[in-house]
Length: 325
Ligand code: PEP
Ligand code: MG
Image 1 (spheres, rainbow, N blue to C red):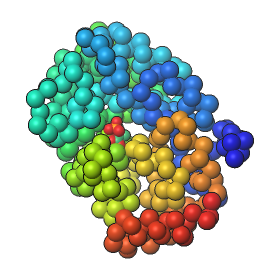
Image 2 (cartoon, rainbow, N blue to C red; image 1 turned 90 degrees about the vertical axis):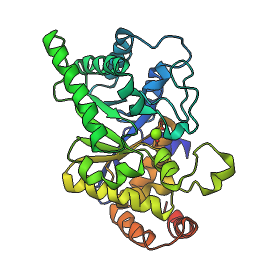
Image 3 (cartoon, rainbow, N blue to C red; image 1 turned 90 degrees about the horizontal axis):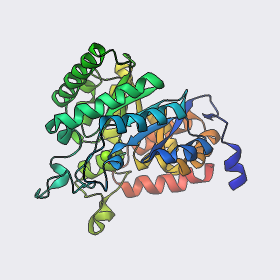
Image 4 (cartoon, rainbow, N blue to C red; image 1 turned 120 degrees about the vertical axis):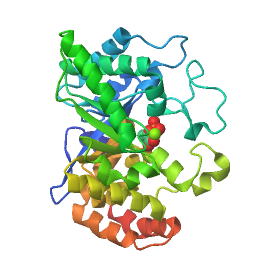
């Protein structure tokens, strides 16, 4: 099997009926880029920038960030690098910058909420990302967006930063794509409205599941309730994919759910054209995609959406799907 998986590296993730999916890598450090390339990843679908801010007393300067982002973007040419703005707080607690006294940090000053409060830091990061965009295909992604108003605040700040860079004659890609993570229930529910505001969505199932099902993603006592195939999750994903399709924007997934080969037919059914995951998971997901048709996925999903519990959805997948690949 290992040999077989290796042979997929330079082949497209294409279904037997010609539906193409782009598989990208999730990374936390730029040193992971060679592994993404070695596993056949086409670009970076999620760069978690918070790791640049960990284990140090001072946040990285604009210049330091710029160099990291530029090097990554250059290494991935011509494929895109999706840089997610800082997502600290919640399960990504950074003691040097996060508030220590939040009773409920997962619902507190996390991710883009933190950035919009610490505007100086936020602008520094946006400047660094935009400057890197002059060197290769770069995308900007905002985490934990909860609605249109928050997105517009980010957009306004981004416009401010662009105007500054223009004035300083600093080169950047004026058409850089702007997207958001869909990882809160409110974002999923207003996906039709958000789709008018951005170039792409990327569903973050790690948090979407946590918040939709009200199950702490890191709490072992309720881990049995953390069910990716819960009917509520399938419906939430469908809402987002349908809204994206209607608005004509790309919808991808970068949560752990994208990395599970057994789920690949379901994700084909939803119509995803981009999936991003840890590099090591790419070949197995590609293998499944190359073995089935998109139509199988569409048919399976139609059946799954009728089932009332995650248990039944799982059983259907294991009994009716697993034998196909
Ligand atoms: C997610 O929430 O699914 C996601 C990809 O982001 P993170 O795991 O970094 O919160
Ligand atoms: Mg998340």
